[in-house]
Length: 100
Ligand SMILES: [Zn+2]
Ligand SMILES: [Zn+2]
Image (cartoon, rainbow, N blue to C red; front, side):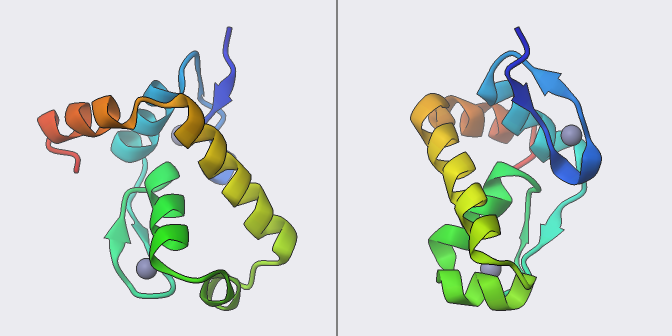
């Protein structure tokens, strides 16, 4: 079963669990520079988490020229990941690999 798709810029790598997806996004993709504050963050889930935890929706919309549908899609993805992923284990694995 391949439920999770990477989805970064047309990448269609697929994974059976969300943890592997986040690790792939963090290790295999180039880092993302936040358009609001310039912080370099891992691409994928961590970039979304940074954007919505550190900035307001209004800042995000302005910096990324996003519309409310784009914001809602990302918030849904973030919510689904946080409901299903063992983020503590993901972070521990990534730290072990020196990726965070
Ligand atoms: Zn990918
Ligand atoms: Zn930022």
